[in-house]
Length: 224
Length: 71
Image (cartoon, rainbow over all chains, first blue to last red):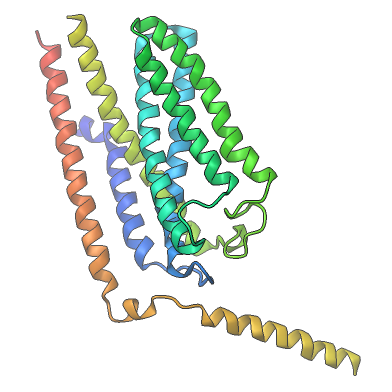
C-alpha cells in the first residue's frame, strides 16, 4: 500500500493543483483590466491548455528520438499517446480560445498569426496520425512517424513561437495589445497560473499513462 | 512657475489614469453576495466526479495488467 502511494503521488498532486486552480482561479484576486474584465481568469484555463500541448509535444519528440536511437516499440507507443493527449489539449485550447476571442476581440476567429499558427500546428500533428494510420507495418510506421514528428515539432515551434513574435498579434507579450501585456502578469496571477500549468499537465500525463498502459496490454494481446 | 504647471499637467494625467482604472467593471457584486461560491462548488464537484472516474479506470487497467502477468 505504501509503495502504491509513493508511486502515485504525482496523480494526487495533479488533482490537488487542479482543485487549487478551480478555487483560486475563481475566487482569487485578479488585476482589473479594461476589455478583459473577469475574463482574465481564462488565463488559468485557456493558456494552460497550450502549455499542456507544448509539454506533451516535447514528450512526443523525446520518445520519437529515443525510438530512432534504440528501436524499441514501447517508445513508439509512448510517442503516439503523448501526441494524442497533446491533441486533446490543443482542441481544448482552440475552442476555449475561440470563446474567449469572441468576447474580447469581437470574433471567434480573427486573422491573427498566433491563431493561424495554432491551427497550422494542429494540422501538422493531424498529419502525424494520418501517416500512422496509413502504414501497416509496425516497424516502418514507427520509424516514419518518429521522423515526421521531429519535423512537426519544428513546425510547431516556428508557427506558435517564432512567427507570431515577428509580426503583430493580438496575443499578449507580442506586438501591440493594449488590453493585456506581459507587464499585467502580476504576482496574484502568477500564484495561480504556474500551479495551474503543472496541475493540468500532470492531469494530462495521468490520462496519457492510462492510454499507454492500455495500448501495451492491447499490443501484448495482439502478439499472443 | 513652469515646474508647477508641468506638475499639474502630469498630475492630471496620473489622476485620470487612476480614475480610469477604478472604472473597470468587475463582477464585484457576484463576489459580495457570495453567489460565486456556488459556481466554485459546482465546478469542484464536476472535477471530483471526473477524478473518481479516472481513478476507477486506473484501477481497472491495473487489474488487467495483473491478470495478464499471472499465467
